[in-house]
Length: 190
Ligand code: 5GP
Image (cartoon, rainbow, N blue to C red):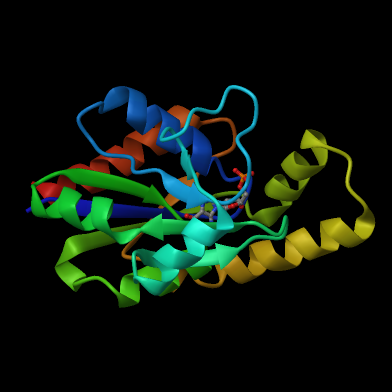
């Protein structure tokens, strides 16, 4: 029996970077793609991060109960996590890594046996201020958008207690966070 590793954390905490680092360091682990109705961007290959499917196909799969969770994202497209690659991955003894927002995790955990997964929350060691600063550095956004992002970050951080483990993200120390995540996974899967 393997384990699904669910990873969440507020935007800007370095989730994407952690997942890419784990992918490089553990090619034997599984990183199943999501399904989406949005079009591929230049350079995006079907089946890498996403399976690109039509809305009609997506709706058919909802009806068949193929998703562990799905959501309509602010861009109007549907995104969802297929149940089968996760469940088959664990049942055949693999470590399956999956990033989720807090809501996606809350939906997915309801549909899986408790022993199938562990969950990790990445939390900024220096508080949300550093994330706000990072968001502002990435791209210019309006004051309204900024307030909205700060509000959702605080809401996400308030959900930390839903998770089995918290790993701290220290500013400028991504390698340390990747190692801490690996330690938790090693400890939970030995
Ligand atoms: P993008 O289109 O920029 O790749 O992603 C847009 C948003 O969709 C991101 O916030 C991302 O976290 C979210 N997303 C990607 N895959 C999934 C999924 O499987 N389920 C849910 N609920 N959201 C997803």
